[in-house]
Image (cartoon, rainbow, N blue to C red; front, side, top):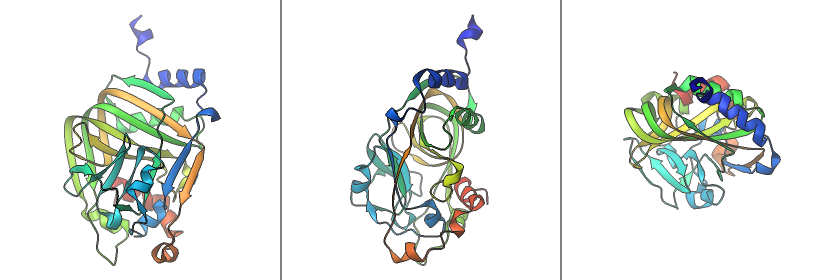
Length: 264
């Protein structure tokens, strides 16, 4: 009897997806993104979209700030700046972003997580559930995190260095047994250069005081929520730095994954 109740997280979600129609177009809505990750990889850090403008398109998401001055997480319609010291604060509406993605988060799947789960295991389970693998997914975990390792980029000065150079001197942090939220997007492999192929996640503590770009984690217990969309809106910068950037070079999956995972 106990074994019947203790379905794996993947089994429970797969069952829900079959029952509810995980690929239903009725649930699809727009994923809005300012600029391309390939541009950031190449050092295009000048912001063109304000936080106020960004939040008109979504209440959930992530990104960075002008001159790469910290990481960004958008939680429940509020944008937070995660600075080089690992601290979180509410971002000014007038602050600019060179790269961010948001969505109006409406989870199609909500399930509890009650067993210790490491990063690779959880993401493999989520991958198995992505029946529409060529769509964009938004994922959020809320609960107790046994261990998390995260980084925060530091403000850059011109001439800007490419992201792979910047992350070599980034600030890294680790926390144990913390309540918080991990959220972000799963981009399909063909979207390399638009975003990170696979999972791009940010973290913020439950008291909204600390956070950053997720490098590794082990979850204890909490709630997983999953959304998806088939609608993508790209807002590209009309700036000299964007126009002159070698975006083909910035679309290397290897370079993007190294920059995002700190595997340099």
